[in-house]
Length: 250
Image (cartoon, rainbow, N blue to C red; front, top):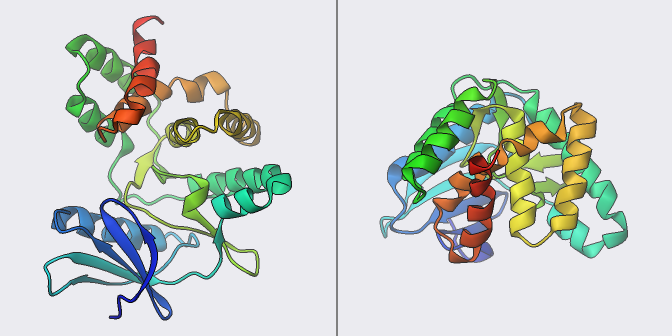
């Protein structure tokens, strides 16, 4: 395993290329259970037939850090393509939504349930007992589905290969549940990155292509915003709190 060529660096991991493989090396404080769960998620999604990188190995490095070894997919992310070709951004966004809808058609029954994850996340927030109660009431009222949900579906997690195939990466947050919750999460991610106009275009496209009411997707927003707040990013705190406070006034 060669860790010479860095592809990307994040706060909790570094991505290396090793020939036809990618090695995702996690920080020393990353729990073994979280690493194994991510690998298991990806292996289970791989079995659904969706085009994603194949898992080859999970390894513990000499320094004690954990790593996931997977297939290298050559291409550019949709985020890169949208940045490089702004005139084609709407076309890429439409392709992005089509891919998400294709993903939602898949069933992966052994994945954790989205509702259970949201319940746990709500309990971990700093919001008042009243707000947590309202969030849980809303969550309980939402229809229970079993569609494959990515949990972090954004253009940087979609690679477009040279022959035009789309490959979805980063399955750490995958669950089975309501597709509109997954869409609300994507809408939230666009907003948090300062791309409000793109967020609105995305939501309009998703609702039109899936024949889903916009109000229904937005009803999930306080729930996914509460879940995001657990990450504790100071720059997101105020915006997330505004979305979560919606539950008090409806």
